[in-house]
Length: 100
Image (cartoon, rainbow, N blue to C red; front, side, top):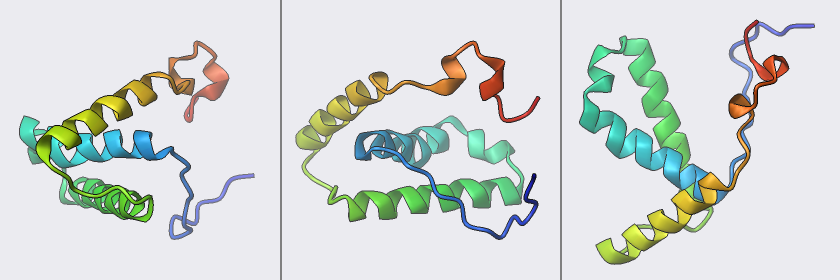
């Protein structure tokens, strides 16, 4: 059975470390590369909404701005954590693909 109600909220579960790295990519890396410039207005809005959602999640997890050296240390730990998280799309099993 499929559900085409795109107004329905979806829940994502990520660790705080994973969320921090995703937010960093969206807030810093994506903007710096000019990638956003080639997106449609709808795609930009989707990216910005995801960035906002990540920020709220980080605030809820108690992660806040801090001095640069502490921030870099935190990002180092977060990136190391992300490397330890299994990722289904890296698995060769085609059953994990969203589209077939």
